[in-house]
Every structure is written in C-alpha cells, then in structure tokens.
Image (cartoon, rainbow, N blue to C red; front, side):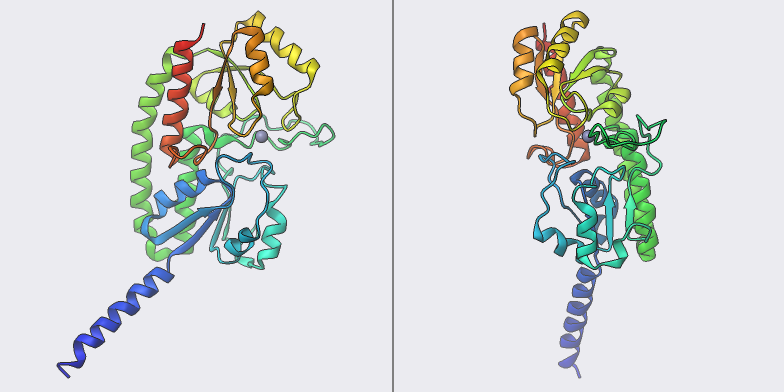
Length: 306
Ligand SMILES: [Zn+2]
C-alpha cells in the first residue's frame, strides 16, 4: 500500500492536471481585440484566439479552412456584430456544426451590445451605395470606454458558461478596469494638447476614437466606407485639407498609401499609419498597447506637422 500510494497520487495529480487543461473554455473571436480582452478577463481558465489578424481589413477577411476547425471546438464566439463580419463569418458558423456558437445561443456574444455605437442609421437601411456600415459604425472598440463595456460583457458571459470561474472572472475584470482607468488618464493627458485637431482618415474607422480623444474628422479618402478612392473625390479631399488646414491623414495599415501620399504631396499634410486593432503590428500585443502605439504615433506626427 505504501508503495502504491505515491503512484496513485501521481496519477490523480496527472488526471486533475489534464482535466484542468481540457476544461479551459475555448473562446474564439473575430478580431484580436476581443481575444485580448477575453484573455485578460478569462485568465488561466480561458484559451482565447481570433480568426482575423489585426493587420487585416476587418471587413474583408479571407476565410481559411482552419477557421472552421477553430469554430467547431469553440465554447464562446465573440463577434463585433453590426455586420462587420457579414462577408465571412455566417457560413463558417454553419460549417462548424457547433450549435453552441450560433447567434442567439449563450456561446455567441455580440460585443456591440451596450457599447456607444455611432452613426446608427435613422432611415431605412440600404446597401445600394455599397456602404459597409449599414447598422452604424462597427469600429467601436477604438474608444476605451467601449473596451470597458466589452470586458464587462465578456466577464458576465464567461461566468454564465463557467459558473465555477465566476469569482476569477470578476477579479480579473476589476484588474482590467483598474488598469484601463489608469491608462486612460495617461492617454487623455497625451492627447489633450491636440483637442479639436482636424483629421482626414482613409476609412471611416475612427469616429469612436475621435470622439473619445476630441479629434474632428472632416473627411475620408474613401468616398464611402468600402469604396476605393476616386479621382474626383480625391480632388475634393485635397481642397478640404487646404481650406481647413488639416495637418494629418490617418491611414489604416492595410490600405494602399498611394492616394494618401498623393494628397500629402499636394497639401503638405502628413500621412500617419494608425492601427485599428491589436496585432496590427507585432508591438501591439494587447488592448492597452493598441492605444499606446496609436497615440504615440499621432503625437509624434503632430509634433512634426507643419
Ligand atoms: Zn469599416
């Protein structure tokens, strides 16, 4: 008996270790931003991954076969909603044959719920103009206040799916919120000198960011969200930048810089790459470094602007 006991204990330890590993909740999100927040809130109890990478245009993600496998094993799917993922996610959910993550079931979380969503349509929604923002602006996580709302929603949903982890999720959420509040004060202080600055952006990705940090978006390089630049619209933007003295053009990393550089050449405005998502560049490892990187890039550009 004496000799058997350690073996039994070792086996029991091994069994509990492997069941703990298996018991990790598998969270899959469309965007790395939500995976980052879910990992922070979920801690050791959660394994969070994303489908799209932060350096990709979130509207136009090429579905890979591995996405179906990822979704087939998911306990929770977090999506931006507002039809941001309409081009690729619905068929993948069907192909995954995973009922848990179907919209309407507890394993599906629409992260937009409860967030401050801008540009909600006031009239009948029409896609006639090819607008890819039919239900309001889907790039809302670029406001840290919305990040807080998303973190709370994720904590609540994780607690629902894994009641045993509820205390852990609440503790991790409190730590996330505390850090966010502290970082927000730092970001607000860095951006305060530039309150009211007029900016042009390539895609309409930044209304929430602009609202939070008090920038004034006066135009877009795209004539409409999802519609590539046209010569006549580019001319309008050049005139706009000249008459309104716009110092910077903010460009998401996945767009061709040809038109922004052309506009910059005509006007003297500075082209700045701003990253809408975690993973946009290797240094943006989480939701906090997303704002760190973007704000530092913006401030550096403003200091160098005319
Ligand atoms: Zn968009």
